[in-house]
Amino acid sequence: MNQKVKDLIQLTVKNMIDKSSSNNKLRDFQKTHEKKIHFIPIRYRIFGGILQSMNIQFGNFIEELMAVLVSNEKRFEIIENLSGKKNKQFSLSRVNDDRIDAYITRCQTEQVDIDVEFPQLLNDIISCDDKTQLKFKHDIDLIFRDKTTGVYYYLEIKYNDDHDTGKFVDINRKFIKTYAYLVNELKITNSNQLVPILFFFNNKKMKGNIYIPEETNIKRGQKFFDEFLSVEYSQVDKYMSDLSESPEVVEAFHKLHRKVMKL
Image (cartoon, rainbow, N blue to C red; front, side, top):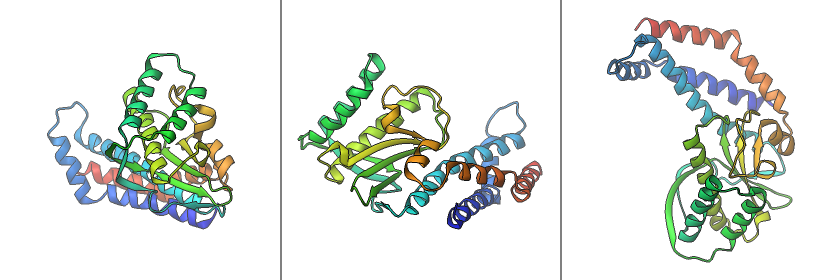
């Protein structure tokens, strides 16, 4: 694993701890929890809130890390005007919007062979000629292109496959609708030109996905690294594990805990 990746991980961890332990951040947490009735002592609720905030920040960091890892591969190029954009406005046809919603509903209520019907859905999205456009705002995690084949890959990046039922449905709906937008933006005419991938950084599989085919359009940690990257998944896993137990990081969390307990 090259030094650029190591530096990114170290810097991000340091920044997350520094940001979460700032006096302004602690005051914000204190004001929030002072208004709540709870049996857990307020200092422990503040400390728990800080840890939860770091978890959310870590999810954003995974997106940045994956972009760096992909950009280090000579055969790929990041599509800079689309990748990592927050609240980017895009459009898709009303017919495709309704088509995607109907597909999600059918998957929830019927026995759907997603290995057959999901590819058909992608083909129908591409061939749609409806000109009525609806405007949306979505985050786009990562778009990159294989320089040799010209194939685009769209990654919807999640840290872990542990979402509750409602949120899980929304993730898959957003994933497909973002694909539909990218079809228009990249002028895709064939489903082989753009591959949508729902990516989970961890290998853990909570349950089967009833919307997206596992073998073709879902990649979990190890599988994505093996197929796309020269860096080994085990290297990143070990480095981050070692860093989390390093004396410097452990002491930083001890220091943060002591600071919170003095509030």
